[in-house]
Image (cartoon, rainbow, N blue to C red):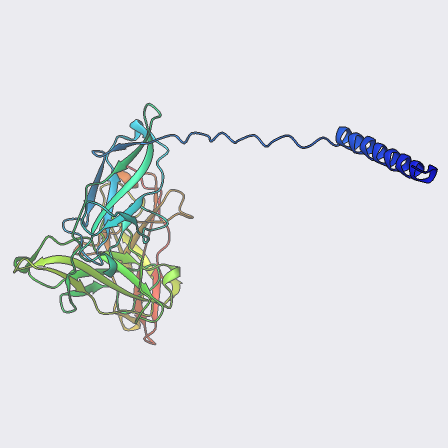
Length: 355
């Protein structure tokens, strides 16, 4: 081999050696990343199923399209905690294929109103909770169904008062026009609201109301339309849904003071002593007086509670009870003034009530 060839070989050897040293240094300075550890899943606490702690308290015997069903956790409040949101499910046969269904109220998920998609299907509800031993459990309701459709009857529901016209803060009352021998097993009244009185009806029922046949329009109802319905058995034992006429739009009226007064039993108001109120205008300056609305307040300034006896034969009279002791009272009524405008007459506030 010539000298030039030997020099070329030597240069190649030196270059290779240098590259190896550099590569080794890089490996030492930048070691390969450590392998990613396999994640260990956190065990999800299992919940035991409890089948005797939930019951259907209304609307499930049978379930009817348009009639609300309500589930409750039938346990003492001290025996559970951390109750979650209710989940409603639907099945074709009530045995398998349960799927979650929307439609429960956001404010109270224990309520569900079957729709046309639920007809001939089966329903159940479940709710998670912790029992008194902090054991995670799921309460499952009895299965109800199949869901039926009730024929709608538009001639059996009317209004006793409050619909002429409907006024904000005033009560409207619906009733079944049939005689007691012509129907039975009436369910809970349902109230709906619509922007135009034709479509887009929204359930606005107060499901905790003492008397669900009564609905008091609020500020959110102003300019809207209302209707009421109820499911019952007719004389042939067929389920029907009585549906009222549409009423509205809901209006607000001016409040007038100085035209209504207490004229008996109000100085001072006493528990057990009847109080009477009246419109103090001359008879030719008002007409068409509505039912008087009685309200109670702890301080006479705010948080007025409606305590009207809507079954009273004479709403202009109120006898304070022990619940009224120490509270303040006021009363109001709608009337037409001499210009045929609807107004609200409001009395002065009286109280506190004494024994």
